[in-house]
Image (cartoon, rainbow, N blue to C red; front, side, top):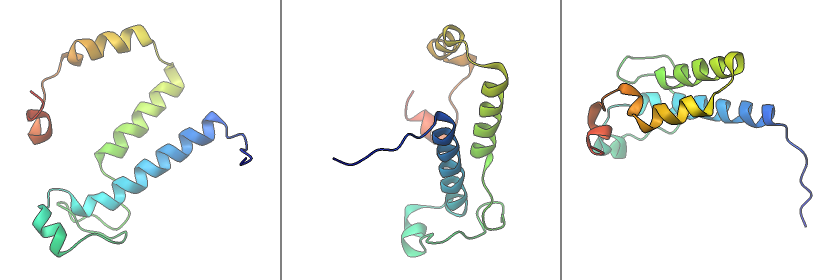
Amino acid sequence: MIKQEFVSMQDKATGAILGFATGDALGVPAEFRSREELDAEPVRDMCGGGSHRQPAGTWSDDTSMVLCTMDSLMEKGIDYRVRCSALATGCGTRPIRRTTRCLT
């Protein structure tokens, strides 16, 4: 049997956020590129570029939103009834872009 050490919820959350930001920064240079372009020139390292010519290691607005969300959760907590209600009603927003168009 493998011995498991206790990992706090804070450490798990920190690891998840760091993993998200790292993956996001790796993905910035690939954003909006076609599969053919990525097959010909795959992203293999932390590099700059992308649609806005960002320096290597730059995360996108996705990570910024995660950080803001976590900040709010730490400060205000969460009311699951309000959150579930918002999810059930679509949060009052319309889907945008190609990914969400596929879902509607």
